[in-house]
Length: 301
Ligand SMILES: [Zn+2]
Image (cartoon, rainbow, N blue to C red; front, side):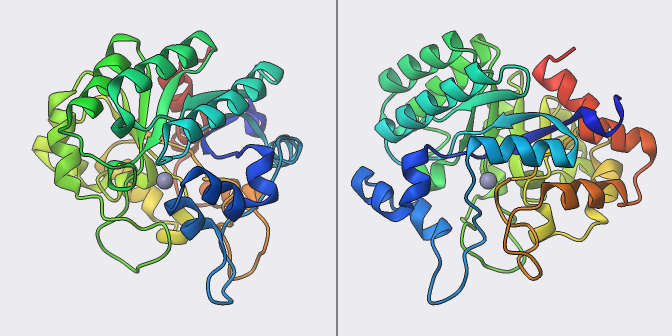
């Protein structure tokens, strides 16, 4: 590992500049109802969403020692919004190929034909995966033909799939959607050769890797740590290293989410990196989590 400069962040969200200027107006125009409910302040309470542009992202990456980041699509409810997001990401990765990678935004319930055409565009423009996806917001289910078509295409084209998973226990908060863990088990059994990243430590599925059946089926499944300071105590990293093993965890921040809203009003990538380093993991486990696992998953040499 190249010291702190070599960190790879597997879970970042940027939005097109028009969306950042007026999130609720932009979303309304596009028929996006879930996203503003998550990112806009409610009843006088601050939202945990931070707003940044590409330059600020690159500066914050520098400050935190993050060398490369994966720009993840959002689980938009409309195909056109996905296209808009992907064209924006296409420009970002073209301008900063040494720092940024991208996953395509896709809305499978808009129909397989539209999704596959967009996936082909994404592959041809340097994207390496698809997601975050979430049928519980986007419509349909993993069993649908349209969702199956996206997973089959991803398998044939060696695209990695990132899925949003919420933990079924704990407190309720904006962004927490019901994502029954059994649905993920069934779907992964069906697509066991496909490389999945389950976001947010798989809603706790990472801890279930101690289960024999999950261990066997989930051989191509990885877990990112996105938003974990909002959900888990710091000892979760050690717990996952024990249950799933240190090779299956990827550092992901969910930047520009504000991970420490009690004390901060701006995203702070550097602080999260510091917390991972002081979480009690061994030096080797930290190196795997912050870089080398991602190198393998994303094919970076
Ligand atoms: Zn997520």
